[in-house]
Image (cartoon, rainbow, N blue to C red):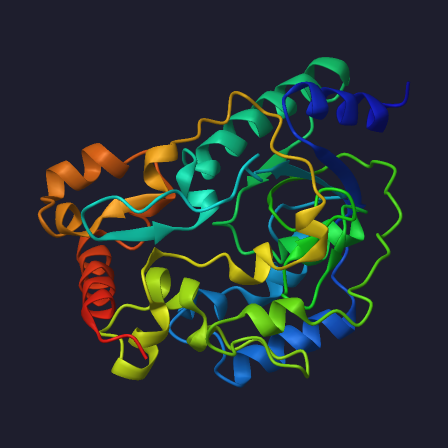
Length: 317
């Protein structure tokens, strides 16, 4: 068994659903140009971190001197049952599916470190690694596609033909030379279900994605007050939005998450909005310290709760 095959086998043993390898060369010019144009148009909104370290984002070898390869892993987070539960008596706000799990950053990072330890145990010369889980400047979806893990769909998510778009990614940039996989094929074949499902029109028919109109962006990344027209589109979504993902035909036929160690909290599907407004800094940390829900911070989560309450109180058209 080659070293690359040993690494892939161990990654699956550690609970990942997919693993692929690509080299550490820059991304294709077309992708870099699209990303630069997207940033220049202002579609990133207040996500100023997207403008920083642009060259590193498109060139993995700039993250680690002498890097030669990138190992990309994917974790399926689809739930077996996605029907909305019966409404609880108090007014509640919905939470995106991935945020009903424990913090995926820590979960994936811990297992990538185990994978790196395994690699060190089977090679003579100790390689150097850079472990990346979302917070490192890296165009991970484009790298995942280049490593054979899927294609970037019209909803701008990485889509695997069998696992669909509900997958979380992590990477190991390494100084090891590894045999790269072939880039993935596939496309949306004229399907526009994600465009039709988006409540705000953030996904354009021309391929544009305006994050400033995206409910996930508004409820998680946007720092200021949300203007009334946009606030109304949020409905009862307290944290994030799944509409473009759940509408995807690839998602509908995908299998559920098989990793029983990835802790899921069903009671986080819908949260009591008045309880959110009553949280203190200490109780917020205690309740959501292990969750992606901590990302916007307490005050923004309370802002979202007030919007959801106002939308629930508004007369139905």
